[in-house]
Length: 379
Ligand SMILES: *Cc1c(COP(=O)(O)O)cnc(C)c1O
Image (cartoon, rainbow, N blue to C red; front, side, top):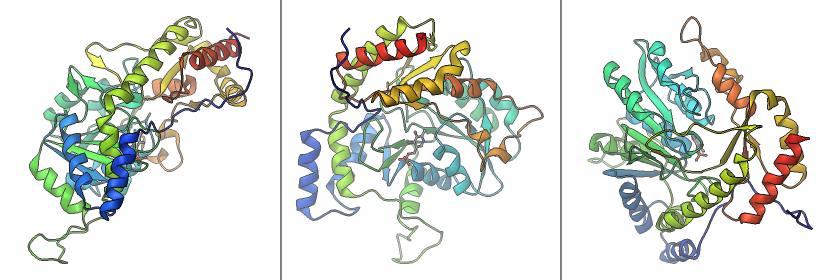
């Protein structure tokens, strides 16, 4: 394998924007409807509802407020506890605090990136109101068990599907297996609108609450009259135009991702002395948001140096998320039982990293990246 004669920057993630998005964006612009009313907001919402097999979809400004608005619509606030995985992007837990409730962190389990369903029941108290199931790095959580526990204890479930557009669990799209599910369209996500988010639901009452609180909680009967404290969490028609184009191109976008992931799988399988194969969960369709690698425990000490050297070669990368129960503003919330155990997510976090996953990569790029990974960890 020949090295490239020049150094190219291989990006972790980039928007995959097509001509269709541009056409819709210009159409929105030319219509003058550039704020949060307009045909693309409606089209994007209804096509996103279809995409997730849900009755309703509500567009919002980003994935973080999608979570916050969901908690508000469920009536969750001060004095309540919400169960969340510790290994996730910070917004999952920050939104719980924004609502006034307290996050209760759980380890990852069953050799997946996601919440350990065997630990959830131990964390439930009489204050617990909801579980947020995150489909981390595109890998669906064990929704069957989560919903079973939620039913037993009368809890709400929110799916944080920010990283998992199009993933399926037992043939069912993520976003349709809970009371409310949230998506992000940040620039590095599978579908993007620059900044943006969506909430999906099959519950008409929650749907109406989401729309009410998204738009300043203004009374329908009497304009500028408010019975609750609301928010301005709307998406603009310009963002929705891009989103509608992105969603129309979903098969093309995800097709490229699967192709790239497959090349990585082939190449990385030869590094199985160093990199663990992830447990393949039966009946689950992962979406390759970011290419994930987890070093075997005895090579974990090499992780940070490996990432630094890859960066110096122009190969973008990132370490796995840092468990939230270890971080300054969240540390104080970890003790849900006498002996909380976070050993698996701490281990995953110290060994895991993501390699360039942008759709702009071709086979040669992936070969080059994997060859460099091999050189660096085997030396
Ligand atoms: C990106 C992300 C969010 C937040 O979405 P933003 O649109 O960036 O606000 C929430 N949860 C997870 C798991 C994410 O990856």
